[in-house]
Image (cartoon, rainbow, N blue to C red; front, side, top):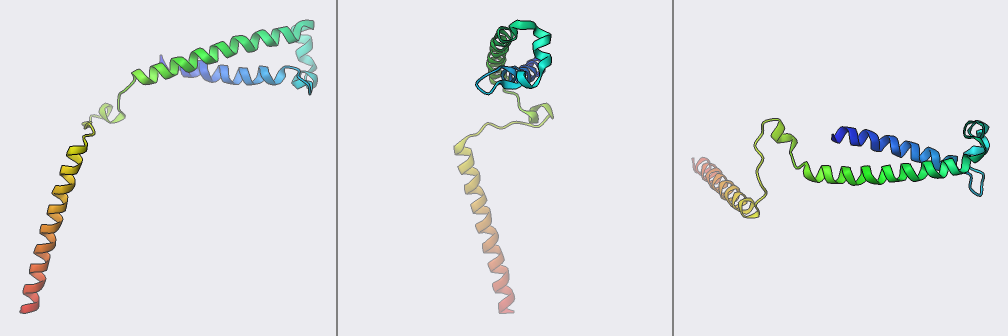
Length: 122
């Protein structure tokens, strides 16, 4: 479902950009450069492009909201899919681990100092 909505969203983005660029504005738009657009849609090219822009904008808005909703509902981790265990973030555990690591570093440093001092006395 998510992939389908992404595909529709990308297509609506591209088509929306093209229809906006084809509309004639003060500079004439791309419809002046492409005379085929006038012959393809007839004399009412401007009204067709306005309707197409409106429909594509609505589709863009709906797919944007759908993608936001689907991604919020999709709180799965890639690590869980791979079989790894996901741990929740707990600041207390983080500080406890930091304290343990600090104690281990101090023990290792004291042991290294003791070895160095015994070697120096010999």
